[in-house]
Image 1 (cartoon, rainbow, N blue to C red):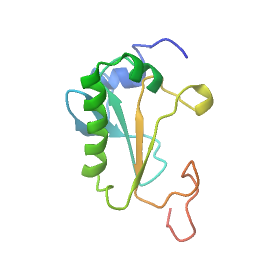
Image 2: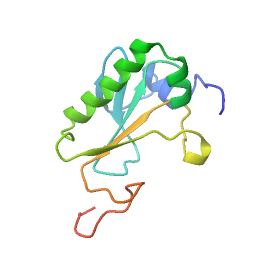
Image 3: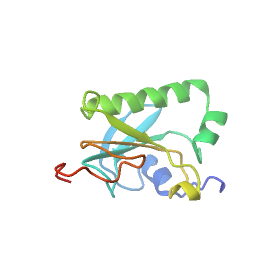
Image 4: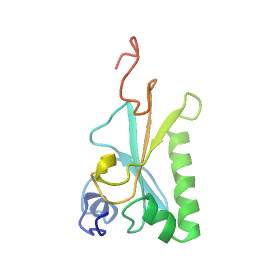
Length: 128
């Protein structure tokens, strides 16, 4: 896994140096729209801290940040209206999992039926 790069796009967004469409923010996390959505609702939630991956985050972050981050993920899903129909959480870890930005983040994806493990294939009639 590469070392944390303080110039990655999510670090820039957290510092206010790059734009985003903000959906939620608190002292632990920032949530914003994915610029390449895989579904009608596709929001990224990033912790406020320098963590490359889930492994790094879960091993190194203080307990209050881990708890606050996961509560923020739940709040985001609820505020997006995804609790009742359901949603998917995805965290890619490493290049082979297609992690592109090496700042730990969770994808909150919903707004349509998702089929298979990746959720990328809509069912006939889903309209997407």
